[in-house]
Image (cartoon, rainbow, N blue to C red; front, side):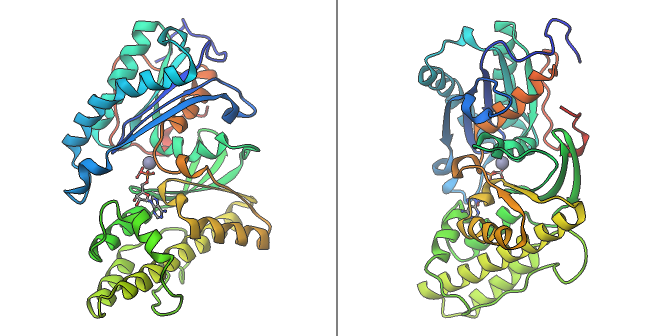
Length: 354
Ligand code: KG4
Ligand code: ZN
């Protein structure tokens, strides 16, 4: 709902960004600088709940919510301290409103809403995947739309055509597991600790190329959708039938990573051709994968497209990307009324233009 008190101008002070959609509590402060948004980043803090969930082999939603309750206010104080600001200096609040775990989202939304109401500043609920998608804008020489974005996280594998900020068309999606989920489940199958993705990627560095080979799923037929569950099964069979030595585990990790990276690159190339653009943005947790980053950069140099990545810290969940996505929308006059709404499932394509 539009509130007339707040005008269509830059927020009058730094925007507080709050991320609590899953298992990281992220907070950031961003002063609005339209041309080079990254220069306006005043502070960012993150608390990861990895240790809390490790014994369970995955995120336990109720524990996640409770930990966000414990950590969010101390993190906000820490970020304000780092930036040398007081809470009264804030010009707006942005919090992740979805998609994500409902209880976890409600913590950030309630704190964000309450703060904004108390301070009399506008607040906005941010789409988590729009946050990821815009994270590369925090780097120097930020990409300008139109571009294609590959969003690869624990919950999503999507190719999105970005005509302008807020104008998103889904080109391809996963039919089953997300890329990050495939990393995590494969790692678990081979007995690696949670969260499996980064651990498996590290192990793959010791693996030998060519000892195992897995198919590149869905690349033989046209289209931009992904499917990773068959690959997971192939890995399971290879692992069960192997000697299960340390070297074998690393060799399988290497072949699995190569299969995922190849598949993603084939689909990215296809998406660039379909959309006629030469700019590719990579975001989400799997965007931190070193093989993916190196091979995409090489593919771009060869085929004349430019690849934009967020820095490693801003690939995985963080408050800075939420502060940025929120600041862009607040600066264009958007915000919502004071009631608390979260959207555990939320289609990126339903967002309004910014
Ligand atoms: O974006 P993110 O932090 O959270 C979600 O929104 O899901 O992504 C987390 C996902 C996890 O599945 C994790 O295993 C994966 O990103 N991930 C990686 C790497 N770092 C994080 N996957 C492969 N290689 C990595 N280096
Ligand atoms: Zn995420």
